Length: 231
Image (cartoon, rainbow, N blue to C red; front, side, top):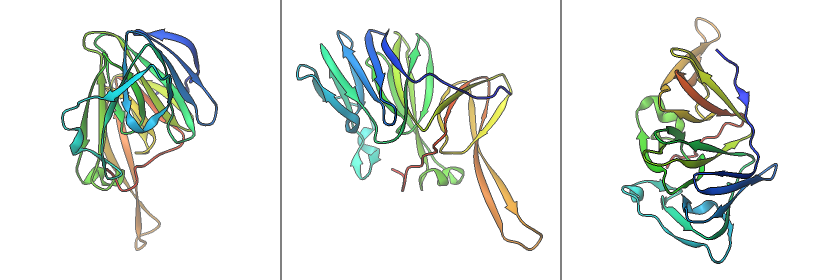
């Protein structure tokens, strides 16, 4: 298997999908967007600043009020230009953009995305079951972004440093459950448990892994993050 490689997480005057963006800052980076005719949407609590001319409004989403964040409904917010707007997440790490060409789709670990252009579709799925209890009490969410008709951009935040690896068909990698950021939808994921014991009569411990099987690309972060208490 190829060794994960650290990705470039800075961008200046990068244009794709109708939006120009800049990623600035070292410890807690910010994503700056220049909006024209193409709007964006985002989680409402990560907005940093905006030009007064940029309009912000709630973006309707089926099932959003069934998903809670710190006891509050999960809300999507949309922004339209012309003008500039910036986002940041309260955590040290890196921000990077995924350029989704028509037909592309990715799965993203909950609360790892910052924003997406308006032509990118978004849905989410709760992953339940005993094998996922360690990831948030009652399971966790996977956010799915796709570009079915037009190309677009998805911006993600990784805690610590961000690495990517491309798995060949059948290749596998085990990642700590709080350590992955996104995967291409062709990559399969399952939760694995490994028992640890110091002897025949010693008490056993247990490790938990998410095992990913290729083909496809997956990204991981060096600062593992777990949602305390789940959603």
